[in-house]
Length: 176
Image 1 (tube, rainbow, N blue to C red):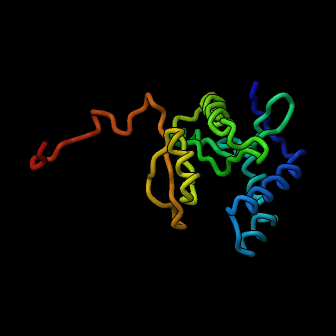
Image 2 (tube, rainbow, N blue to C red):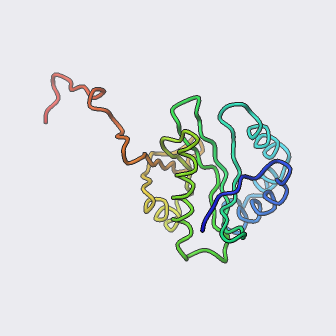
Image 3 (cartoon, rainbow, N blue to C red):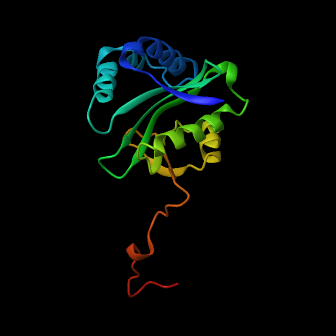
């Protein structure tokens, strides 16, 4: 049975090692400056600071099965805003890939974050075809680009429409 284990700050070093390995192995970062940034104190201190705030807490989690870590994620649910859950990182460890765990773990993460107020999901995707296909198969759609030119994807809860009927107004010149 799959479960989620929150990673407390006291156990964060093991996460940082796995996170950096993932960023390199999966080609997320290749530039020396990016490598130094993600391994450095500026990035890591910011994440740890966000893990300790009162609202909009940043979470680091492992996906677990039978006591084994099979993947990890980093996300923040913005309860002080509109319930957006921004997924900063999400990965399944290599021995468990291509076995359906990616979809199952996202379903688990969705149920887990909804209990914390998540109403929809956003993430950045580098645009690689396999990654885009994975996220689209989980109900995400393209939402444009972020400030760095990286594709932004969004997934709304199936029960929440993008526009309520009362918010859509037709202009006098609009045609059907």
